[in-house]
Length: 136
Image (cartoon, rainbow, N blue to C red; front, side):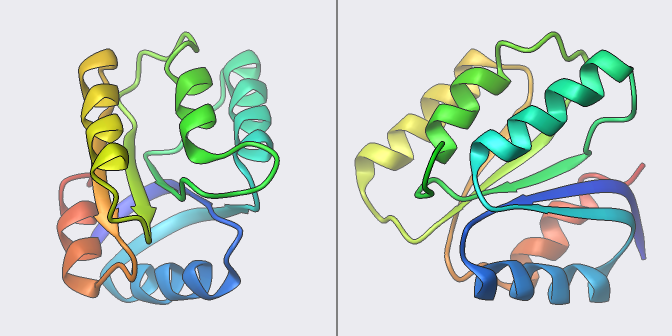
């Protein structure tokens, strides 16, 4: 089973969070799974971790449609942070809009982090593939 130190789930939908966590616990061993209801909460925690020089998440599941700070706003701020570690960011969205897919592709070109676009509902096979690529 894949071992992952830390995962952030940034989504305001409790059903999506539940589903991701349920699948994760069956395909990977994870020390910590943190939940955030919007991008601002997750970004604030990551900024604290950067300042504290603590271990950043290996994997982020990121919704793009959330209140306060959406996933795109989160990405804009996240890629500005002084983070050397390559974080795997999985956009998980119900959007099938080509504009959103193109925006995700654009972020791939702007950062050293891995950015993957996934449609909701995310499936077990998708999470297996994602976690297999992360093993620490």
